[in-house]
Image (cartoon, rainbow, N blue to C red; front, side):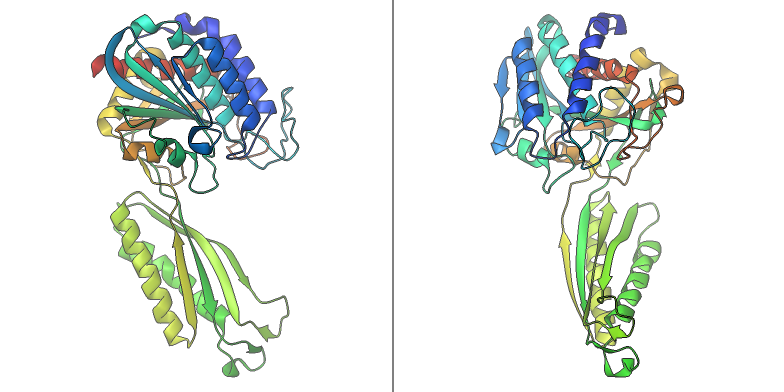
Length: 395
């Protein structure tokens, strides 16, 4: 495995790339300046293959072929930002008002660029080929950037896929590797609850969709708590309820609501969706109303291959030390479209700590005050390199 000292010459460039990327945040499928910068860097590194505008998106896929034949491993970084106004005090703040890299994707790109440069300069240690994916639109819009990268045909020969995500909840120098379940599916649902409007003083002459809606919401909680095995994680949350026009004495004709459903198992998801439909329709019938119910499928769950998770652990132990590498059940009900790559190849996704209380790097992702410990960046580059080489050497 490569030692930290062997990549120390890259640290300044990795940090500089991160700082520049942080100033130009762009939303999903609009990462034009970001992609232009990445393309320029990759050309200067002398990669073997370079595909830009992948599948009519801003995505970029490149590869480096080693000195000896072998398998193909994928390393991925997402590159989109969020619609947030930055509130940090760093001197490389966002130059685009109302947009911010608040989920670490600028760091992901900088770390992967560092890995590309190192491996391009050291092809003799590569047995096989490394493909690098700079992916748009992890944050959306649906269906997300991973879908378009995976469907491009450029990754059909990949034998394993690996990705990492910065984590402001864990200290710099630490890594969390989920043994199996990593992130949940991100399905959403919408519902129109239809009644019969009327005067608030005479509800018996109306069909109250608000009362019907409240019964549906309450009953849905029992689906999770009473019909799902507690060992099968599932989350059902409502995000919007809209009914009426603000008048206190008018029963509206209809109520609109939507929410999110998070699961790790497709069978569990199908069961919950079936029960949601059944419960809503039966309650609507009982209340003399109607319900229009719709489910919008989101990202696949990200489920690590346990053997690949163990490989990541073994690759990072010499780098970070046993006390800083946590292989455990670390399921996160957040969403991440890296799971799309794992539909086609075994692999693993893991979390790289970047929290440093002394430096004020303590805010959660998606917070306008979020900032990372810059010392984590070269470690991320090191992680990418060691994981890729470990897979290619062992496989």
